Length: 196
Image 1 (cartoon, rainbow, N blue to C red):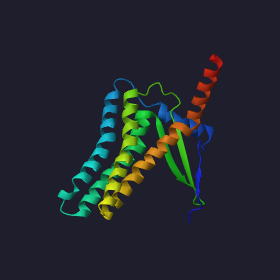
Image 2: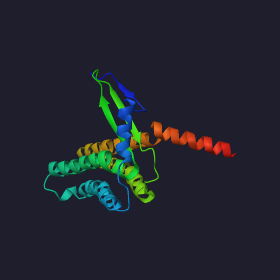
Image 3: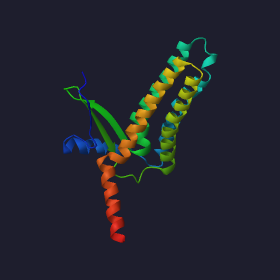
Image 4: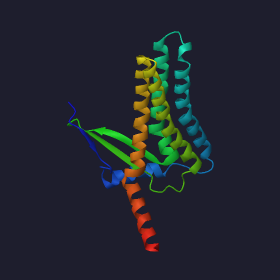
């Protein structure tokens, strides 16, 4: 049985492991030549979300509910994996994951890239806007499914809300609760106060 969920805003790794982990975020090649690769990342960041929504909207044209359900869930899963493991790291320099301890408790780990100067503002806007809008779209679909008494479609919407909402929550925590983000905010506040 699960004993609970422990929230850990900071890395629980040794300093050497921590440096290696954060350096993998820093070593991403974000040069102009690599930005072509970022366009591919942006494409897949948006594609799987759009594909799941389009499949949901046109699901009545499929021969069975099961086929539509499976295709939508597959796209949702591809989207979850892509956002969590690829686009968040490349586009905004953030990463999160969950570790299960031997006693069965969960430990959430959030990282943010120490130097955000290489992050493109346009790519960051695309990342955050699609990350925020997608759960809202699925909530609208869920509300519509409840009103039309389509409870199987409501279940599908709940799966979508769970997957997209988990990524949104994880990246929100990365951005605002990681040690790096707290240090950046503290240094900004100190710099601002010294100017006053």
